[in-house]
Each structure stands twice: as structure tokens, then as C-alpha cells.
Length: 158
Ligand SMILES: [Zn+2]
Image 1 (cartoon, protein in one colour):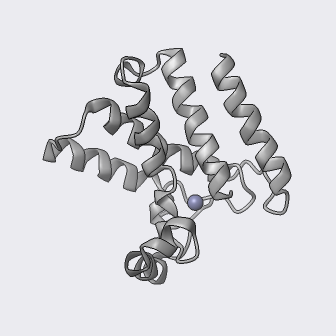
Image 2: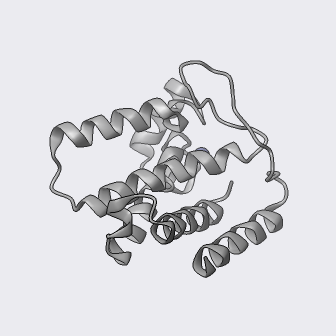
């Protein structure tokens, strides 16, 4: 999925979660906090690819991760999400809870979006089976853009 697609997907997810009142800290959260929180992490899993939007900006980190695990490795797994949640819980970071929850949702939205591509992701890494529901073909960026825009409009209209 493209950078644009991940951003649209993250924004639509956070809007839907706020409107459906699924998570207290998102429902009661400030709009700017939750949009910001989801945006800063929605591209983060692709830190494992030196040519990705975020990988180009943090090459000192993306190159070693890529060499160790490859693209769509452990940064695209539930294991890393669990590690991040445990780390945040233990460290008691001085960030508003709505931002923290939005950051977690932004990260997960990236993983879910990549499941929608034919390449899939190793959701239960280090178990390497890739999970995929190939709705979005890599070669069809126009379809991805259309789906992203429809999802954002649906989320706003919900
Ligand atoms: Zn990815």
C-alpha cells in the first residue's frame, strides 16, 4: 500500500473508532490529539524498508532493520505491537492517553492495510506464514486511492 493509502486508512480508522465509541480514550479524546497520534505511527512499520517514506528519513535505522529482518518482517507483526504496549505501560510515558491510544491504532491500521495487499504480512512473526486478504493490488494505485477516499468519506458520514 502507498504512503497516501496508509494515511487515509489511519485517519478513517481513528474517525470510525471515535464515532462508534469503541475505545473510551479515543471517544473522549481531542480530535487533534487522535488524528496526530494516528498519523505519527501509521507509517512506522515501514521503517523496515530503506526506500519507504519513513525509511528514507531514518536510513540509519531502516537499513539495519531491513538487513536483519527484511521488509514486512517483525515491524509488521502483532508481537511488536504487544512489546510497544507493554513498554508504554511500564514506562508511564508523559503523553496524553488519547494520543497513546491513537498511536497504537495508527500502527495497527498500517498492519491491517498491508494485510489487504497480495504480499500480506507475517502477523504472528517469528512464525513466517503471511496473512493476506488481497483486495488491493499493488499495480492498481487508482483503486487504492478510490478505496481510501471512500473509507474516509464513510468514516466522516458514519
Ligand atoms: Zn507496511
